[in-house]
Length: 117
Length: 150
Image (cartoon, rainbow over the protein chains, first blue to last red):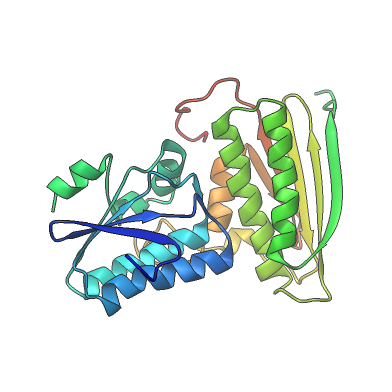
């Protein structure tokens, strides 16, 4: 899908599956742009079911977590559902330590997440 | 306890720019890889050092062009030691609200210090709060670590 620098977008039924082009979500400018692209999916394109597949992501910083939290809020405010999948062990530790596993619905694999909508 | 035998060290003074912080961080990670530290330890140091540099550059020095960040790194076969000091007013790390508090869980900010403490073996601030020392003791094997010791 055209127009996204940081995201690869596909659709499985009525679920929008998002994969990340940046393997390391760390630089402030990239995080800002990434956030804007994610928010556009919800606020601009009114996508109700979003699945973020983290299989290509090797690293993310607390600033990236901030964008995800804001995205979760926006998705909920628009009556949608957000799920995350394919998070590698070290990054999952970050979600566990920060207790963000209580905020996000995280599944091991994309197929598990798709089945849960 | 005997003094560590440093096999690599690096001292830099950098501007308050995240790209400059990125360079010194990459140097440290390259050294850890060259000395065969396990991926989980490298991830831990990457995360903690990144958060500490961002804190120094953006919060300590407020990105001021006239303020610098002083970074010292030491590596022994068993330990990586990183000191990061900014030229700002400092802060009290003990006064940072707990980001895992249910009332703060969905707050977008405030997790950097917590992540540093969770992923490093030791984190110490000076009294003023503008200098942090991060230490990571090497783990010999990768895979899940015992609770409380990422």
